[in-house]
Amino acid sequence: RGGFLSRKNPSRNKSRTIRGFTMAEVMIASIILSITVFALSNALSAGHQLTYDAMREARAQALAEALIDEVISLPYDDPEGETVMGPDTGETSRSLYDNIDDFNGYLEEAGALADADGTSYPTTYQEFSRSVTVTSDPQTVAGFGGGSPLTGIRVIVTVQDATGRTWMVTRSGNDPTP
Image (cartoon, rainbow, N blue to C red):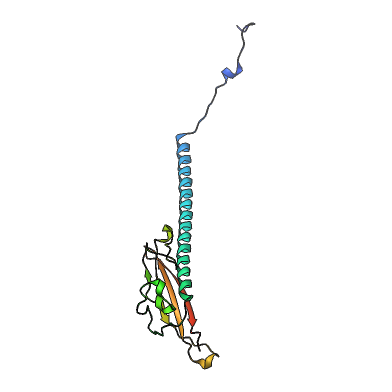
């Protein structure tokens, strides 16, 4: 027996232990992986929502700024001498407004937004509505004009989305004539 042709294989005599993961280890790893994926997807979703909100806010602000710039580019005083806030007789559309206070009560509904030339804004802006309020705003400036109030005007442009969220831009100015 142990003669010339006989060889002993030392690895055969040792027991081979092949060890895998236990069911408990697999379950724990799966739970940790699930929690990690859930946390990452929530972080991505929150980041996406913040980006969307910032983009909506930028659009709303741009709409408000564009309209208030259009309003305050008009003369302070009415060329016809009218003193009532709001459009004068015959001023039935925005293109006919000839002074700042004509915009008082102006409203553009969602889906009908256009720039000063009447060109419609892109679809992404059409979810907003915007309105204008013009009020008398006398200002008293200490050390100027003997403390008597200066005749002034305040313009407020309000932009609103379908959820009711609003953005406002306000400008005030004084009558340029003494």
